Amino acid sequence: MLGLLRRLLTKLVAVAFMAWGGFLIICEFLNRSKSENIIFGYALGVVFLLCGVVMCVAVACRYRGGIGAFVGLILIAWGMIGVAGEWERRFHGDGSSRHNYAMICISFLAGAVMLMRSRQERAEFSYPPFQNDRTPLP
Image (cartoon, rainbow, N blue to C red):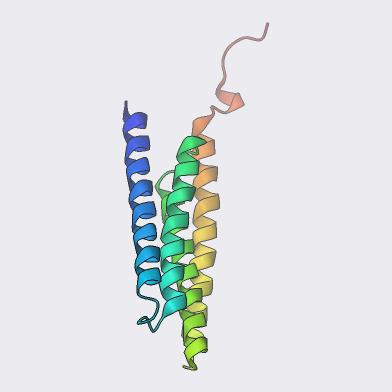
């Protein structure tokens, strides 16, 4: 019952991400003549849409990464938004700082580590180790 509730909650969050991403893309498309930061607007919508799609696929494939996988996905998305912001600054001729590049790299790296580590931890607890198996061999 708890697993069903988790999957339902994850699907709701995924649908909310996809709806928000679609809404942002449509708003940016409708306001493209007035928008000053067109790359960032589309990128933000696409990132939310992709996060929702990845979460839906993960639930459909019964990926059991847990909250660590969700945090890793959000950190990677944050890095993607940072890259879009840097492209927007370069497009408008504004300078960027090394601090921005460092935050983008750190968010990508932390997100990837969280995704890999959460899957490893869940896999360790999903299957019983062979040493503790006390059943006699046939």
